[in-house]
Image 1 (cartoon, rainbow, N blue to C red):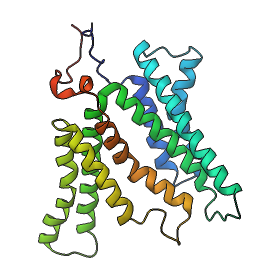
Image 2 (cartoon, rainbow, N blue to C red):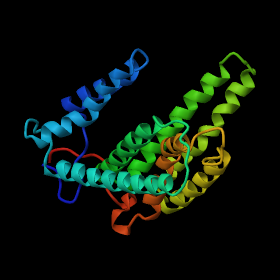
Image 3 (cartoon, rainbow, N blue to C red):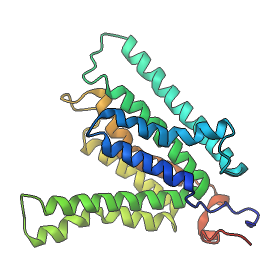
Image 4 (cartoon, helix red, strand yellow):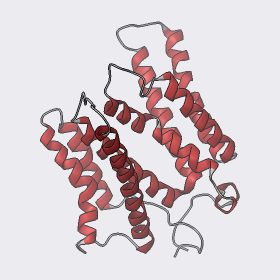
Length: 249
């Protein structure tokens, strides 16, 4: 039995593994036919539908409450985005360069908000931020190494130096566990820098919706982590808690 006051430790269940397999297969087979994206939908929404019909009982009350709360957060985010876009499109003559990207925008928004809210419920702000930052760092590390080894070989020095640009992600991940508010402020400053550096919503050659998807996928995770860390309450500060070692007691 878990100790009172401690969040249950998340462990991948058979349902999660099957759902993850469907999602990966759907995205992987999309190159063959976009109809395979339906597998992604089955992996993401299928388990929830089965739970609501009472056909799948693999979560306890805490997990169900966290899922419902995350779903409500996703509903709020999608509703606000829908109202903003409705006002923008109806307020004047607007041209949509890539109308199909609207579906990508709302799909990504729903998934991002639901996943982030769920992780906050399971792990708390500091662990969530640390693991997302490590994920970003690893992703950019792989990208920089692959780019250095690409057709335009710039020598071993470039191969050694280019990955250093990922170091801030790992430093902030370490800092988020020890000085969460400072780490949160630095993340917010980094988001402002990336927003300006990548020219989000400033590039005429890209559609507004396409730039919105880029903002959502590459900047919003850092922005959400920064806000969560800055807003961390003293009683939630994990620097004074026992590390994540849940289990039966």
